[in-house]
Image 1 (tube, protein in one colour):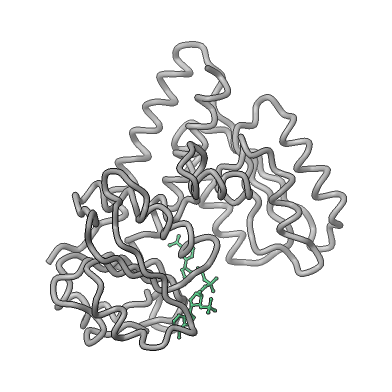
Image 2 (cartoon, protein in one colour):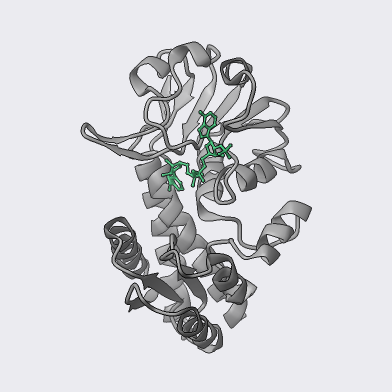
Length: 285
Ligand SMILES: NC(=O)c1ccc[n+]([C@@H]2O[C@H](COP(=O)([O-])OP(=O)(O)OC[C@H]3O[C@@H](n4cnc5c(N)ncnc54)[C@H](OP(=O)(O)O)[C@@H]3O)[C@@H](O)[C@H]2O)c1
């Protein structure tokens, strides 16, 4: 049984991106720039934004943080997004979600220039992903695909089951896994809270992807012997961060499994940096 080390894999990717940036800058290019927009004072969002700033700086990417008060109006936020769209030194724009409830997140995401949408949430990038055109894939599902590639776990022709159908994880992951190509070509089932027999669906999976947000929700009895289990779920519990899989029991049945923390989580930031470097390369070429 293999424990998939997302920390190590993310670090290797971040180092490769840092080397690419350093080579571009040594060749006279301006460094990549990422604008990070945070509205309000949600403590978890503040931690995420700080981590993203630190990761950018380690990779040689300039991060421009905009911290706006919780009461910021829609017009002001849209004006800031338009300003970032126009800035020549900004390659990527990240709008930290969730936004305070009075703000319309969809309208704000729609205002981001798709060429700077490094989170991959703009409908244009979602559409591109769905029809197989180049674009920015959302960072968490793209990080999952990178783990499969790095650990040579090919789902081609296998049954993949995703539990969770959110726009940021489940749905884009289904598109990535079912498209033709290396480390894809899976036969995908997407489950959700209305799935009739979730345990049976999960037990049929050669590759099981969990994105529910319920700690320990999936137990060994729901996992096929030898399955690959990729746990995207992260929940804060009194015992620390926990995934959707009951790790200790599930790891005894799986052939490979991601731990929480240290699995998919670190890959998300690494893929954000990767999308930012891709946007930079496209803008300076
Ligand atoms: N590692 C990372 O970087 C990263 C990134 C993003 C998210 N996450 C974590 O991943 C988890 C999911 O995030 P999300 O944003 O996708 O969550 P979400 O939008 O809340 O979606 C959760 C999904 O789980 C389904 N679900 C809930 N209860 C269920 C049940 N009893 N049986 C089957 N399906 C059930 C929901 O079904 P319905 O659609 O029917 O409601 C929904 O599709 C969270 O723990 C989040 O923190 C981690």
